[in-house]
Image 1 (tube, one colour):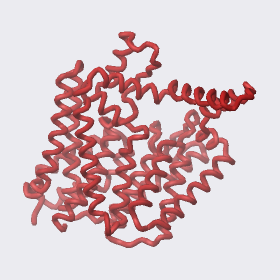
Image 2 (tube, one colour; image 1 turned 90 degrees about the vertical axis):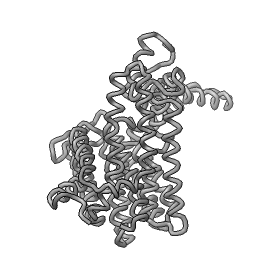
Image 3 (cartoon, rainbow, N blue to C red; image 1 turned 180 degrees about the vertical axis):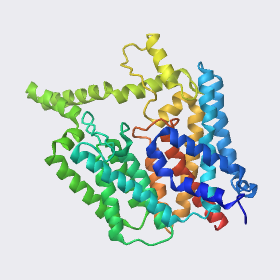
Length: 426
């Protein structure tokens, strides 16, 4: 069945699919360009393919309309409406990726190898940066934050990139071929160790969560357990022997509270424990992360139903400080509250929050049901990866920003692809 006008157009869109990890490294301008180009493929795809996604399209159309409505009633309507309208590109991208991968008959093995090669190049480049102080492109090691950046330059997200694109690569390869457990062990261990070495604490915790979920959902328990134990043992050795990792991963706030208590030399253990708890609580409440979350919840409290408007957190937070409201609440403003669920509550209210959470739960539940019994290992990987990405009890990038939105909807598009291929036997 002919899908495109000519072969060169088919090759062009195939190249776009293969270039996804490289484009992501190049930054938001290139990522947005790729998303727009993928969206343009809709003019070449036969309508029969799009009809297969009819009910899914309706679901996300409702989500898009909710974003629009939250913008219309915002105090920053011009900015918010523009941002919500432009977000449509990611929802179109979400449906076109599985369609393109199917009708172009993308070779899963080659695509997966491409993703893994790019991910492991980032590992190598970052290790060069760690050892020599600069990576292969001349980007310096960020000593202020004790975090590596590799080819991302100023963006300290190389660990996050390797985690998600590395395991997407494994998912694609394992879809059609069997890989030796030894190679999987080596690959899983390298990714986990690099998440630790990168200095991204949230990413390392995400890796641990991912492996725990994968252990529950798949039959490869020995492989997963041995990889996880190896990562933990080596990470502990690095933590106790290298100052860089000891400093980065030491819970200094709690340790500081503990030292203060020791200095008081109180004899009453109950008083010591009570003092310790109060100190830890004080450290948490005064932390920057807590102030971001609190700002988001205050904004939500003022706009419970439809929120303050799509992507308006930065402006609403500043307004809180300018109006001298909650002046004793230690608010710190930034572009987003660093948790996608608090961001949904503050920007889109209960309506947007509950609808998107419902969508996440619905599709995860459906894929888990398909996975029960067979415990298909590739499916277990992508389910675990998506749950890890959206896990509520951790910091997130802004769900409305280019990099986070791209990665979120790309992983989700793979989940749609799994359902699409099973239905159409492509």
